[in-house]
Image (cartoon, rainbow, N blue to C red; front, side, top):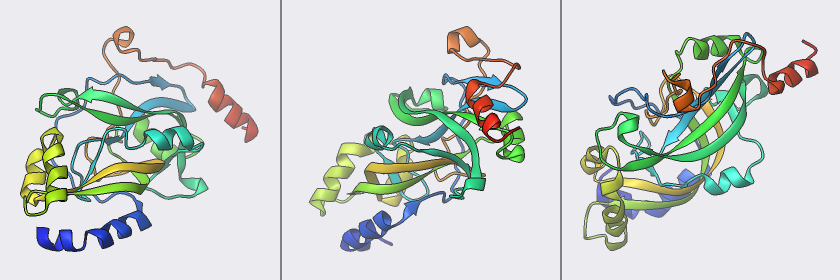
Length: 249
């Protein structure tokens, strides 16, 4: 679809986006491995604690979306249950962990392995991955094999950004935001993008390939004191123990 067609059908496309739950649509590009962000890291036989990146903002994904900073702030404050699932299967058996904390954090592009000055914001989840929920996913996390995640979300506020002065409103959105995008070249090649200013967060899933590739599981740091990372091979946390008691395990 060319720019004129996108602008002509703007209202209809936005309505269609708002009518669906956005999940993964894989489209990987090459970036360096994330290694400089702090997170939780704790192991026991029955549970793991990890920090996962659900989404990185100001990055054009495979839906042609660019998520604005604080896109999920309102939703995080208002939503009681945000789930940690696998593969966007929204059912009880798809749970892989119990979220401990969901938050947005400013982070430099270089700490994400992107050669760009300045910073963006990432959606993080501190989660307790429970072996009894899904032993295969538990083992994959334990062996550092899960390095892509994706959000299940509902669009709330969207703007169209177009690289063409003929379309005054859309061109202003483009001009105001293009320089802040981490993969700016991709947006320039496309000629437009959808700026998602607000969305409702439903879940974060472990996936094989995310719409946004800057969505790893954070690694264990070499210096736990400096990185505020917890490492242990002792008993499960109270959260896990309580869950297992309820299951009579």
